[in-house]
Image: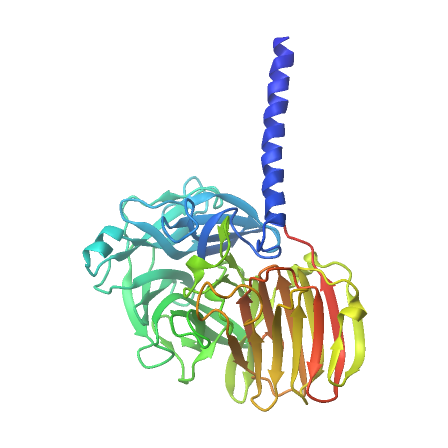
Length: 507
C-alpha cells in the first residue's frame, strides 16, 4: 500500500507540473495580443535585450525584466535559450538586483583564454558585464548613479556568480554611464568595452575584464543628439573582402519617426579610436518599435541582431495585461555600398523558415487600381508572411484589413521615393496621443524592382524592403485579427511575384 501511495504521489506531481506547462503554452497561444512568432517572457515587463552570447550550440538571450510587475520596476536579467533562434526555452532569472542597484543592460562573452582567471578546473567561463544602477543615488540627485559590474558562469550560462569586487569600473562623473558591450580585439589582445556616456560613446580596454583603462570618446559632432545615447555595439563586418567596423548607437528620444530608435555608423576601429568619414544619420529601422538592438557575441562572421519591439513613448501603457512588450524577429546584418556610402542591411534569419507552412505563389499578376488578394490565397491566417516583387513605376499600398474595417497599410510613394507604414486605423490607438501615426522610411535602393518581405503577428508587423535596406517595425493592437489583404495601385502595375506563407506558432 505504501509503495502504491508513493507512485501515486509521484504520478500526481508530474501530472500537475505537466498541466501547468500545458496551461502556460495554451495561455501563450490564446492570450490576446500575445506574439506567436516573437519571444516574450511568460509574464510581466520586458525591455532591452542584452548579454546575448552563443556557446556550444545554444543562443542565450538575456533581457531587462521586471519579474514582479507589468511596468518597469525591479529590473533584473531575464533569460531564455534557443538552439535555432526560433523556439525559445524560458529560464529562471539570471541576475537579480543587489546592494549596488538594479541590473541594467550589458553584454556577455566567452572568455576562452580565461583572461579573467574566473574559470576553474579547466572550465571556460562566460563573463557578463552590466550596469549597476543605484536608485538611492538617483533619488538623492547625485551624479555617479551608474557603474559597471561583472558576473560569471561556470555552467555554460545557466547560473551566474557576481564578482566579489564589483564594481569593476566606477562612474567617471557622467550621469548616464551604462550598457557596456564587450568584444575581444585580436590585434591588441585586449577586451574593448563600448559604454554609452550621455550622448557619446566611451571606449575602455582591459586585459582581464576586471581592470579597465579609458581609450577614447566618439560622437560629439556626428549622429543624432536629440536624446540620450544608449546600448552601443561595436563589431567588424566583411564586405567584398574588406573589413569595416560598425558602431550601433541606440537613442531615446530622437528617432526618425519619434521616440526610441537605433542609429549606426560605418567606419574603422584601430583598437583605440572609432572613426567614420560621414555625418549623415543612418537608421537601422525606421519604424517606431525597434529599440536597444544589439548583436550576439561569439557567432563568427554572422552578425545576428535583435531589438526591443516597443518605444519608450508608450511602452508602460500598451494595452496588454499578463505581459508587456516583446522582441523583434532575429535578424542577420550585412553591408551594401550605394553611391559611395555604406549601409547596413537587416533581414530575418533563414532559420525562421522552420515556422513556415505551405506557401501559395502567384506570378505575373497585373493590377490596375485594386485587387483583393485574399480571393487568390483563400483564408488568411495570422501569423503569416508575405513576399512581393514588383516594379517601382507606381505608387502602391498593401492593406491588411479585418471585419471591423480596421487596417494597417504598407506602401510606397514614387514621387517621395519612400516607404510608409500607416497604423492610424489599425485598432486601439487612444492609450497614447502619438501612437496612431504614419511612419516613413527612405528608399535607398535604385533598382527598378522593389522587394518586400512582411511578417505579421497578432500585434505587430515587420517590413523588410529591398533586401533589408529599408526596415519598418511597428506594434499594433487590432480588436480582431486581420483576415483580408488588398493591393492598391495608382496606375497599372505588374506584381511579378506574390507569395503568401502562413506561419506556425513558436510556442
